[in-house]
Amino acid sequence: MNDHPLLLLTGASGYVGGRLLKALEEKNYRVRCLARRPEYLQTRVRATTEVVKGDVLERDSLLAAMRGVEAAYYMVHSMGSSGTFEEEDRRAAENFGAAALRAGVRRIIYLGGLGGEDALSPHLASRHEVGRILAACGVPTLELRASIIIGSGSLSFEMIRALVQKLPIMITPRWTNTLAQPIAIEDVIAYLVAALEVKEPGGVFEIGGADVVSYLDLMLEYARQRGLKRFIVPVPVLTPRLSSLWLGLVTPVYARVGRKLIDSVRHETVVTNDRARQTFSIKPRGIREAIARALINEDQEFAATRWSDALSSPGAPRSWGGVRFGTRIVDSRAVEVACTAAEAMQPIRRIGGKNGWYFGNWLWRLRGFIDLLFGGVGMRRGRRDPEWPAPGDTLDFWRVEAFEPEHLLRLFAEMKLPGRAWLQFEVTHANGISTIRQTAIFDPIGIFGLLYWYALYPLHQLIFHGMLRRLARMAANILVTG
Image 1 (tube, rainbow, N blue to C red):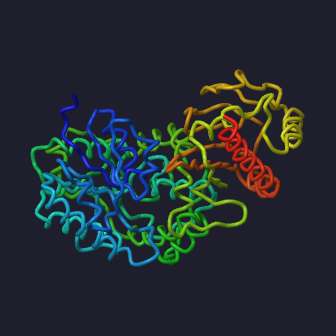
Image 2 (image 1 turned 180 degrees about the vertical axis):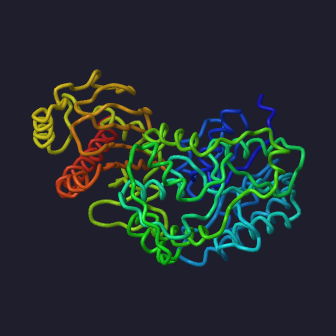
């Protein structure tokens, strides 16, 4: 019998919230996740974790979710919205606080943004306002304020990564000398979990890593660890506003959020008191270790990220050639089939080897022959088992990176490429309908990698579209004939 109190977690599909969910589950906490699309999260949580439908912008939907909850995590912000994010943040916090008070919640834990009260961007000012609204609701609120979060997949880290990877000559405006106190994602999660047990039920705690550095220092440390030589050209005239427009060209999937976030970089985000150090027994990492850990884990975390969420988020642009996410290119498509998840996964788990690729098999064989000519493995390896793949198995010129029998197959490319590539199939099931999502991910190396992707993009469109439609037909036939 689990004697842990019941926790409510918002934002479980987000970057920090998703990792917090895993940490809480590993410690056997009872967790209830609030989600606008429960079917999305249901396949990603443990059997002991409850997922309920709700929206912080709809107060009535919060009351049932709060019932019996001891502590609630508020991990929501509206920066991705196309409207005024400050107003949405304000209304969401008021709804959440009112519902928590009415339900008898004993503690709210909120992750906000670090920054001095006298010098705040609209983004940070909104984060601070949310903290004040929650604290004023009548429920003790413990607010953690963090600077840049370092971890593969985090917004700040991915923007730094994209800039350093793509620009051998870096034009650095004055704001790149602004000081910050970056913190590793692992340390942020440790603080969030420990916040459940600290004696002080509320208050503001500033959390940061071991080092105070500039944004330029972060870029140079990333370049050093990746073995990249970068030439720095300081300029005094590039304002944050102009930089945000330029950022939209370098990392277009972040364009809307980037324009709101980059206004913050002119303001220092440094810890000004040691209250967190005195209250929490956590020793945060420095930037060297934080970046090193992010780079070590980036392949696993990158491939495990739910790219469909990025594609369907409000305002995310689609363009010819796939969606750019950081330095990677993502092409994702989905189809719905009236069958069970197991039936939808059956043709997916059998793919490759003697079963073929269901569409344009001669093109797949031609690609394998070309790979052999360039010293690659080609298509000759086949697959170990015609029915059931396993992580680590070879599958033609792919290797199985992850497999979940009724949910996921992720393949990593081992053919000769000017970059790295993944092919992923996901299945979600709700109300008798299975959604099959197919995602091709390419991480190009330099200009040749980009030329390779765009040259073959029309062919990829043809093959991947045909493959997905064939998978859907096969799944439907299994339902009819099975």
